[in-house]
Amino acid sequence: MDDFGQAPAGIDPTVPSVARMYDYYLGGKDNFPADREAAEKMLAIGRQMGNDGREIARENRGFLGRAVRHLAESGVTQFIDIGAGLPTQENVHQVAQRHAPGSRVVYVDNDPVVLVHARALLADSPDTMVMSGDLRDPGVIFDDPAVRAHIDFARPFAVLLVSVLHFVTEDETAARIVAEVRERLVPGGHLVLSHIYKGDIREEVVEASKQVYSATSSGGLAGRSLARITSYFDGLEILEPGLVPVQAWRPDVPWEVPADPGDAGILGAVGRKL
Image 1 (cartoon, one colour):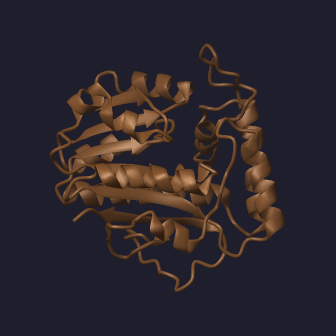
Image 2: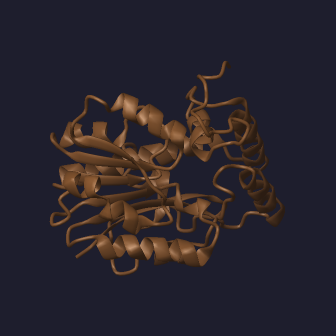
């Protein structure tokens, strides 16, 4: 596979990016050799556990689409996607605007490659905007004048933290981030979150995964317990079917929700502020 182009100024293409690795998992071409090498290491680790990393990425993307569709159909027409990643098929604005024309979307990422591609894709889409922002400082995102001009914070909006919080390795920092997001929600607002679940995964597998992601621009990876991920929805009403494997969240085809998530995977849920 050929490189997709020159790296933007200031970007070292030899350092893997989690956004470009995710693009590779989904079958995209917006990635460099270093991204593909790191992604293949993670895919190999997954195969040792009997998991298909590409399928997990697709399932996570499907959860995002179904959650956005449900919210749009329920009357939520404003979305802030933090850690949006590279544009692919069925992006948030496409799903939301299909079911609720005029929906407004803010895409937030700190990867310059993501920002370049997203801005090019959305240049002619007045209901969307792209901003450079850091997940670790959500207040700066919410208080940005351009965001406040685009999103009416007096009306319900949804914040999407889809497969991004597990790149914050410090538990206290991750909890603070989500608490700040929940605090900003207004009644009727929603939090859409998916996160790697540690489960019964062997410690050597955990360490191997951490080593791969420690060499990326994110600096690490942290799977977390069911209880800790559940705590991210404190004070919110968790919509049915609850915190479940992403493929079991309101699937388009029948999928039995397991009583115990068991091994590692990605759990997802949608919480509503009352």
